[in-house]
Amino acid sequence: MAPKSTPLCRSASQTGCAISYVSFRANTPPPEKSLFVAAQPKVWFSKRADVSSATGKGSAKWQTLVASVETPFFAVPGLVSTQCVSDTNGSYLAAKVHPDNRSDDIGGDMVAGGMLIDNWGLRLIDVSLGLGDIVDVVGQQAKAYLARAK
View (cartoon, rainbow, N blue to C red):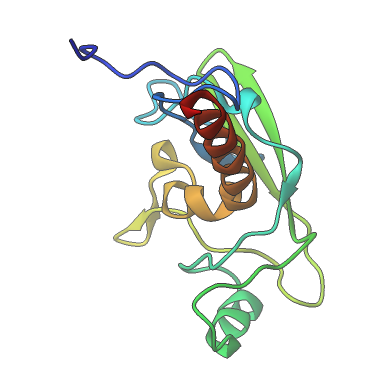
């Protein structure tokens, strides 16, 4: 009989489970009663965040950078660092932009009618922020699955 729910993964060798995380800017943590707060970012993320193929509004430099890329995926190493944070409003992946000659900022914020919707965080680029780590974990899970299947 199949389980009624899918458990959260607790290690990279666990299979049949879900990975959950959400990202917010380090200087704009989730507000009280945020729509999205994850249960487990500490389990999965290193401090690397290369922001692969992130889209959305950002600084003029960011928009120029994104427009100049001719491939569907790209990375900007060192532009963003991440840290797993747990506070009274939940656990999340805090993203900090390190402005340089490539860009002053990145996109990814939810904006409606010119107003920042702060309880969404960087939901538009969650996958982009954690893509390298997620690919690593999926590789480890695949190895664990194949080892048990023998």
